[in-house]
Image (cartoon, rainbow, N blue to C red; front, side, top):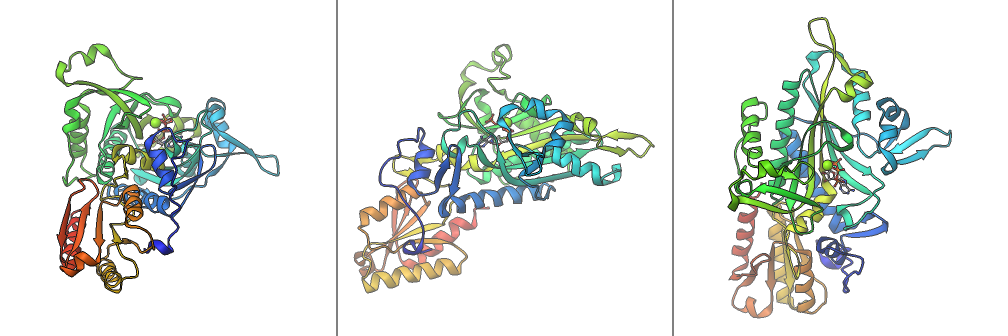
Length: 446
Ligand code: ATP
Ligand code: MG
């Protein structure tokens, strides 16, 4: 992409409404624009990253054997009357009346809708296990929308639902989700810790939240610092293996890690003193096993093979895809701007032309651009007629992990400069070698 043809409305001034750094940088870098409280338009740069995160979530869900689908944003009120949550969900639900006076709502979550789909089509244990998911916009009329996309009213969420014959199988689905979530966050360059949590309005007592540690997090968390050393790494996981998923679940949930809702001082006291840690955390996902709560009330029954009709065991599992943009920025930035992890960066590298209009510099930039593109990489070329300082400022703010700087002086010696956004370290290399280096870096990014 050439910046001269892009739509990147970078703000010069610091937006006053932003209380935390991710919100400020997302506005400054021209990624989002608020349309009303807690509701945003996603401008091209923000949208590109949102799509990248969405793709990672899709890949990891399907790797775990979960099936993608799409349910609507607007739901019929009757299903929520049937489940009993029409009353219990409260003012967070945006209720709509259609022209015929029918009660509708903008979905805050989809347990009712998916249970209705299931009961309409599945009648036998032979069709189990089944896990369906979608990534769709949700609406929750939050009392205090704030922090930009981190606590929006409209937000983009992956929600998945497992259907199993019994508790044992449903707990395998639970563990499988835990493992696939860990993989998902790792690919995004994030350390998200699964923590014992509280059921909330979805219900159920078997639940973990995934928290990214950050000073601006809304939850207070207590944990054994040993948990922060755990990595999944490139471990091959067979998601069908009950033992493997259970082992990873045990590994990650044995060290003490709880949110303030479930924190227990007495148990925490058993953690060695030097490892007892408290911090703030951002919730980027949550998994639930809630048994037959919905299947019993809504009549989602299957034949168990012995002539009995039994309610299926269910769980639901959510990832806050739009919130993740904010969480990644909170975890990875400096005072100049964002530092995207390589797995989610909107463009693989920036190209800064120090002397736009200089025939040699222009040709060298074009050639770098073409070579990178030919290798399947996406460069962002700042070809604007701007001062070098302005171009560097923009690149630092939008946070691409690598920058190539091209100018007449370097070209005279046959080199361009390759700079890491994270460390600020630069290296002078012949253009072909610089391209090769960048290709190598991304070859190792899953
Ligand atoms: P919170 O406690 O932050 O209000 P929740 O527990 O009500 O969230 P879930 O029902 O678990 O949310 O939804 C799954 C995920 O969706 C959450 O883990 C979070 O990452 C994301 N999410 C929830 N509410 C919002 C929101 N208002 N804006 C952006 N993302 C959200
Ligand atoms: Mg939650």
